[in-house]
Length: 113
Image 1 (cartoon, one colour):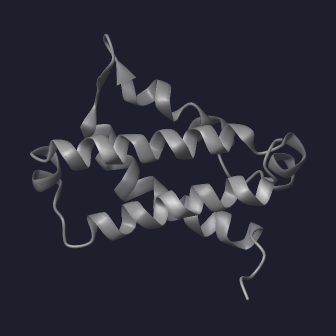
Image 2 (image 1 turned 180 degrees about the vertical axis):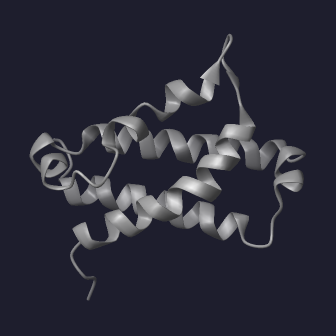
Image 3 (image 1 turned 90 degrees about the vertical axis):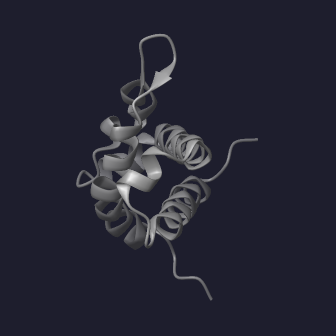
């Protein structure tokens, strides 16, 4: 049974929230020396990318302000040369692209009671 679009959007928001919390007070230099965080952040971005792919076309077409294709292809952007991950890209996406994505995803979700 497939999930509802709202569940995929919540997965995206949950991962963004995790990444925001983990980067609070944390520098890029610290990140580049922390393999555990590097791997966790890359995994979170993979989850976001996969969830973005699962959002149905009808919802995507109603929210053209979101670059669905770019985020859905995030895994391919991160992985290069024999499964290596470019962690500079990971950091850049987390710090510079996800805050905007969060602001675009939030209005699509029903208010939690």
